[in-house]
Length: 493
Image 1: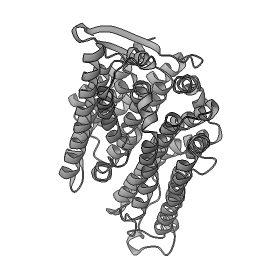
Image 2 (image 1 turned 45 degrees about the horizontal axis):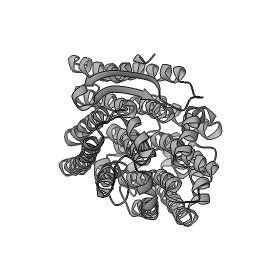
Image 3 (image 1 turned 180 degrees about the vertical axis):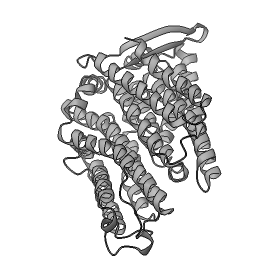
Image 4 (image 1 turned 135 degrees about the vertical axis):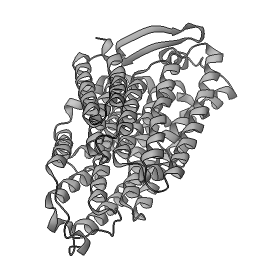
């Protein structure tokens, strides 16, 4: 069944060509392609043996022997989790986009981006991984540049410069590793790092700095985050959903797949400083969100905050000397859950902000008021997404955040205690938003505000029910990556 991974990568590309060949059915063809990939992801899940910790369903072919580049793909628990997340977010984003169904350019670029993400999350050779990594950024840049709102040129340029410079730094670092060791294979490089024979001296720090910079920009980690609010604010609703729901996960995935296995000693040495950066992302981002009047920028800053929790968990389990194995596993399980949960919840929040803008033509927090009187269903379902992002027990957001804090408190108590401030500020931001949008007298401009339409219910209800399902019975997701987490904790311990 190894061919399933290649099918997942190829199917969206074929769909993109078919979209380009159609005239009036672009969205239907794109959704059909999404359905095929969703079925493929489900079959991949069914074929995956959750009791094994290594790579599974591996497909390996010679590609460029002269430089050691292979077509090498496979999945472990983390890769499978991200493949499933990608398969959920993209049809959600295509349905949410308000542009006409015949917009072939939008659907084509989205499908190419989806294929690149599947490749990024399954490639096990750096050349192949980097090819897919860069391939995902190009359609994102074009979608912001072509389909974005005001200031799209500035936002797209900023997005391109940050990600391009980060990618160049990462490429140079891996070229240095290749010239020293003669391989691009992730597993081979990880084995060399275990024995301390990967690199020596200042070259190690240069390689670490290059890879760290490339991934920190992509997460993004403070202070490399300044491109994100502009890009998310300007991008069309569906693109914002994909940027936060799937593309931002490439950075966290890279930290787990590349930086932690290859440079464990360097991360330990820089541990306190890395934890400070994670805490800054958690605390400063919601403070910035509190100051925003634009709802889209508010959600964008909160996205930085929630990804900061992932970085707190990762740096905590690698950056301190005393690390009980059970607490390491708790923190890593929380990180994996947070990756998935944030992708679903943040995409839903951007969807609701897009609906507000579509109905009203504005998205300022003070442009609405008293919506509960006109659209109780809309307000109710949006409140669920907000509470999920806040981490309310019974919803998916609580599971990941609780495990991250549980594990991190036992390992890096001081940093985690400061990070709790981010939870408080996030609660203030959401309560303020709910009060401004839903409560008070009905704004005169919202007197004709419609409640959720049938098509919108078909989009949001399944996603919201998934939030409840994960919050109440999350074991079906834990089963995917439990063995991977245990194996990773042993490697880092």
